[in-house]
Length: 214
Image 1 (cartoon, rainbow, N blue to C red):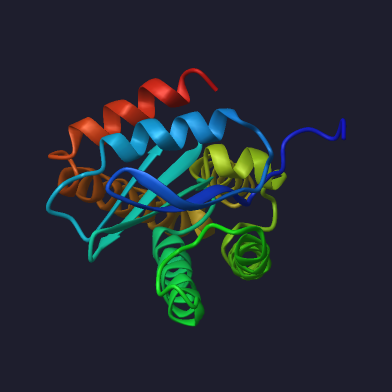
Image 2 (cartoon, rainbow, N blue to C red; image 1 turned 180 degrees about the horizontal axis):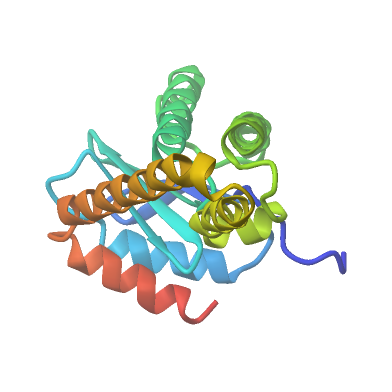
């Protein structure tokens, strides 16, 4: 279309079992996401119910249950809890469709896929609305556009605190300290998140290697 890649969305999602993709939805139409997903699914983290890794501004999410793997590639602006809810909804909807299917299993026929596409588009739209709400309520008023804020949410906070401090040094010193403390806590949380998933190096390296090609 010439408008560039879609921002703040789910680029790709799928459901697989035994490394066989049963259903996939490529929201961006970019075939690189299909190759990227295949590589990540080969390295699905063992002994996890869910797993997330953010690389190159994209979050790779897995939900593993009953032999099925729900996988999604989304922009990093989404909270992991929101992405997990999206994957759980995807799982639930496909389970419903599976029960309705006369064969009792995923048939992969065209009509089945069309129905699923409509459901997935609805789930994606719901997730996008959550992202917009988060942007409106959480980002500072003086923040840059969403694209810039997504790369570093700390920069506008530091920038605004510094400018205010120059104008009202005494009054805003406490605000600056609170802002810095909040950033430290955020960094600690990120560090903790990363510590919880260090054992999944295979999935991380697979995602990193594939993301580097995009």
